[in-house]
View 1: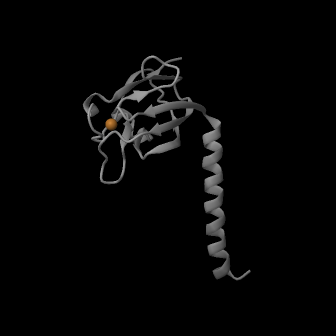
View 2: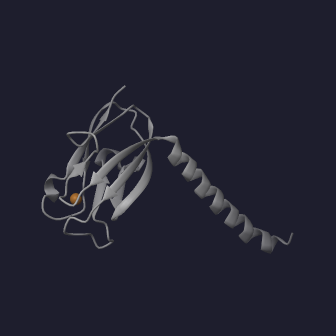
Length: 136
Ligand SMILES: [Cu+2]
């Protein structure tokens, strides 16, 4: 095959392979649901308080449903889901309306981590946070 024709084809194939990989990564972790609600609080279905508990290094899929709470950021984000100490590891998610899956890995260090909304989302924003508990 002519190389000039092969290169775009290879690029297309690697794109396809990339999306297949992320899909399998997402199906690999335990799914944990979170709601970033219209009253500008986080909710975890089945839990009285908004807390998620994971094992150190556990692969998880966060399934976050977000609702507009009165204000949005310029990029259209209605909330965010941020652990400041874990930002470098991907715990820094800007949330658009609707439901989206995010594959993440729990930190290795056991303890409690604060999850915050950093988007000025409306009334109650300053108190919009929840807890990540990492324990064996
Ligand atoms: Cu918020």
